Amino acid sequence: MKVGILGGGQLGRMLLQAAANYTVETFVLENDPNCPAAHLCHHFTKGDISKFEDVYSFGKNLDAITIEIESVNVDALEKLENEGVKIYPKPSAIRIIKNKILQKQFYKDHEIPSSDFIVTQNKNEINNQLNFLPAVHKLAEGGYDGKGVQVLNDSNDVPLAFDAPCVLEKKVAIKKEIAMIVAINDKKEIRPYPIAEMMVNPFLNLLDYQICPAILPQKTVWVVEAIAIKLAKALNSSGLFAIEMFVDVEDNVWVNETAPRVHNSGHHTIEGNHCSQYDMLWRIILGYPLGDTSPILPAAIVNIIGADGFTGIPEYEGLNEVLAIDNAFVHLYGKLQTKPGRKMGHITILNSNYQDLSYKANKIKHLLKVKSAN
Ligand code: ADP
Image 1 (spheres, rainbow, N blue to C red):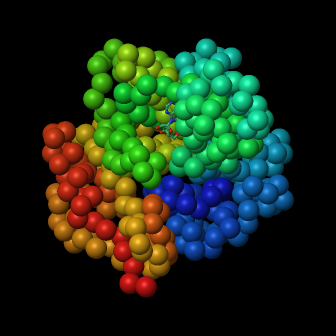
Image 2 (cartoon, rainbow, N blue to C red; image 1 turned 30 degrees about the vertical axis):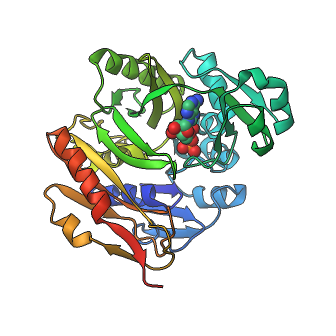
């Protein structure tokens, strides 16, 4: 089977690592020939995943296509789907998720709890909605890793607001940020993964560290699972869906956003779960039975981030010490350049004891620094 991946970042790289266990010929479309996935696929094509022609000509001789990011040309995927190429997830699901206005409207239409919102076409329109503040303002398209998100507390913040189509959504009083990955196959069989819980670094807006399974009351776990399964079913597509949610200070659960693909919140499933999210997506694409999502042991993920003040060829200070820690698994993404705040890899730690996980996560954050000699 010939399977293409749109995007060649770290998620594509890990998908390709899992593909090595199956009989599958892999293709990657990506602009950067030095991207993390380029050297692990059978066939690399340089091209723009957002351009119709590039995606269409890449996909027309393939059996199936999947994505590692939503910013793909959905029109081309739709045409390919009509011509018989299987797309995971369906272009109709990507179209909804790719645009935050459509995504929020979808939640509303399907009665999936998500914070109240209004749509603004430009920043002037916010001046007519000042009673909606404090709110979180999000670019409809093109935001990632917190870069398309801003908090607007009051009218003083409006001049700095994005001047483009956005959703303005009520600010949730967040107690916990969590995520659940749900797998659905062509037979509509569904398997949720355990809930992951994130700690966000407020300065970089990137994950500080993550634990899984999350520490939540059983009642909240049931609510989260019910919402995630309802949402994934409503998207009406096979594939993997990573659903990011908030638990608020009153223990209500709100959907923040969905990613229709393998997701950073599931990196730990490689070592932490019987079937990793990457293996699971191959099972879905290749038509094999779904795998076992249950955890082997609780896991933490620590991101490896480029240190401030260093740009250039990466040097991983403290790597020996980290590799000497029991049950710490290092994943470097093979990026040729580091820069401040850039995600260069991650480390998964396994332990039955949550205190030990958090101790080791913090220890690793202090030990490991991505620097550069030049
Ligand atoms: P991105 O897709 O760029 O990561 P998110 O929509 O996940 O953007 O938002 C980034 C962060 O902003 C979230 O992790 C959360 O901390 C905060 N945030 C987003 N939406 C809200 C909201 N409605 N209320 C409170 N905080 C929010």
